[in-house]
Length: 107
Image 1 (cartoon, rainbow, N blue to C red):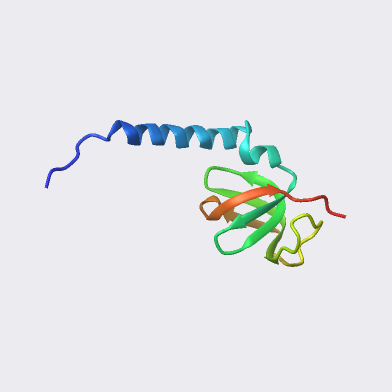
Image 2 (spheres, rainbow, N blue to C red):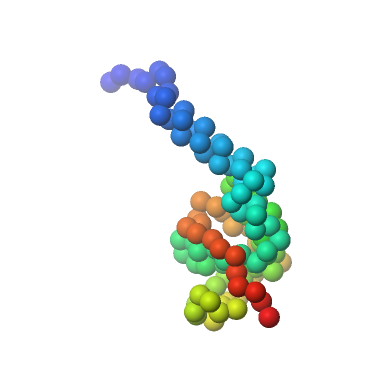
């Protein structure tokens, strides 16, 4: 069996792109950074979460006033139909996130 001694150029380009995307998030040029301080919904692999986005890095987000959402109800509703509060500060791994959006205004 032959061993690959050099990383193929395609892999290098993927690593460059991921690094570039990570820097955009951390540097506040787009992505999650534009939602800092706002209430955000996260659609994840197992559950949905909602909270105020208070921190973000390349691997996780920090939510305050966080809730796990068991039933959303209509997506245009101001609050989820069934949600349970989580600890004051909740960390969510980005690898589990399938999508996110700014929550509707809370009353």
